[in-house]
Length: 301
Image (tube, rainbow, N blue to C red):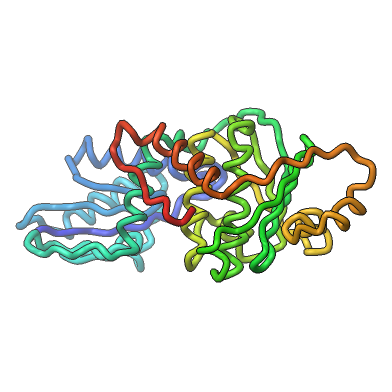
């Protein structure tokens, strides 16, 4: 039976001041070249695979010796040497005859990752200078969504699709942000979009790139569009009072909106049917995924 060994490193003090993954890559390379290990690592978590008959203590000694030479400490309490280990939350089971069905929730996630990874450029160690744009978004109950792009002085408001009107407010707020990216994203290519939102859950979700519930669907579409357009996404929570312009647009309260903006020249975009935005999002995805034949579901739009 194949052995699996899980290790966790404690980088030395000098390594913690720089990108830890550079030193992890060095350790990975040494173990492969010197001992012909088969292994994988994510940051400071390592997992290695050995054929039946391998003495795990010998492999453990090799790992510790190499770490000692590099000045790394090994988190002994995190080490596991057995045929089944938990790695990054995934149970690694050594039984080639065992198979599990994907859950309904897992399938669209895998489609999303399969679409994203070929186009994602990663995180640059040297961040390029980007122009920054700030927008404010809002969703209002069963009425609609409203948004303002401050730099261009463009605003719009539109109704929510009927199928979304009874959904949780978190979904509607995330949908409003997605709508803005579908509307203006092609103008933000290569730049940074700063979102102002008064929903703390949505702000946290965008910041962490994950959220519970149905709001994950528009969030994933938002992140995919940002990756396609090379847009850096930033988000900040503001109070509902501070978000008054977007709030008035989401409620179609044009009198209040006019009082808030005063005599400033504002370009009010014509109301667009949500189906047009859905088409635009789907088209953006198809331009990228046509060669990979893995278009994620777009029913959430």
